[in-house]
Length: 144
Image (cartoon, rainbow, N blue to C red):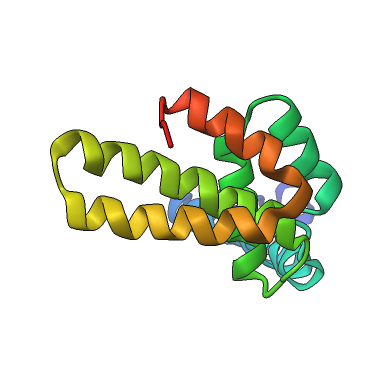
């Protein structure tokens, strides 16, 4: 027997097969990545980690971050959290004060009066946080 018959002949793989193998491997990793992210976001949604507590809302108003206070109020409402009511009332007040100033400046008295009513109602609900409502009044240059 000759030497050539004992050697295994190594066939060259078709480039299409190599490309398909690479695509399959990439798709497997993509599916693992997407599945892990879906589990992560589901876990975050189940824990309601984005709802704000009184401490973080207090931090926002002490730093003058009234937009963060309003955002926290809406996040809490989205997740069904009703506490802390004083901070939510302050968020309502600041938001209404902003719209009141806009409507009053533009001459929309009916809309401005609706916002003023929200401000009055919120001021009663916020109790000891009225000092921050006074700061918001100064910020928006609202006079009684």
